Length: 86
Image 1 (spheres, rainbow, N blue to C red):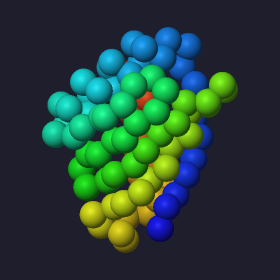
Image 2: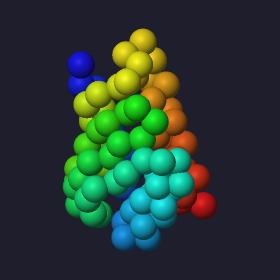
Image 3: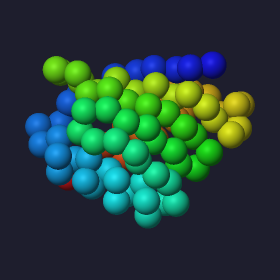
């Protein structure tokens, strides 16, 4: 089942996504896309993102372990964005 949520759009999208790509790769994952849209896969979670005027809409498409709550995955993704924004 798909699960979507939004996060605030960072001011410097290009740098944010360069850092995001590195962070995901360091955990064995992959980001295919750019600062407009793309797909992410890491740690058994697959998703897509679309950058809109004020936010980034993230949709979780698949989880290797379906019993993991979507809110837990959302929290981890939010923490990654907070971490790379520092």
